[in-house]
Length: 154
Image 1 (cartoon, rainbow, N blue to C red):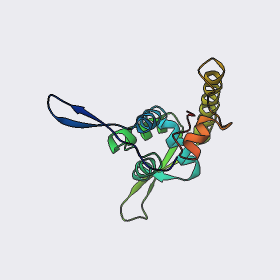
Image 2: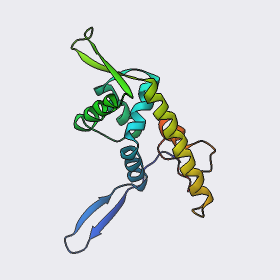
Image 3: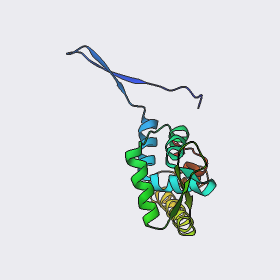
Image 4: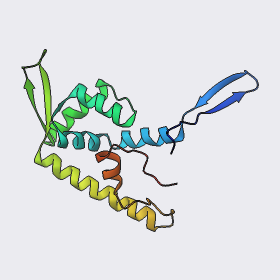
């Protein structure tokens, strides 16, 4: 892909308004990110401990999708309640920040989810839905580890 984005516009003859249609690639990317948000956060925390705002900015930079504090902080609290992440207050920065770290339970969940996604991709590829992914990489490793959310083959 050349890196150029194609924009589709709809023109309403009655109102004479032009409306931009969201890029299909962006729609798929957003839908996958929403559905896999807990997996994405666990994968980021596997690589390094982070505070909530770091998670928000990393998701936006990696996937081009914005999830605000009202989405991320409750999800982090839920992951902590499930024992998949732990947190400690860092009092050494400009202001106190709660820093989240992946636990062994979170790593187990991350591995299980990656295996499950790989199975789903293999089933889609083998059940008459086309060739599936042309790459042998799993959706989880392509989508989360490499921060590539558009690995679905044409």
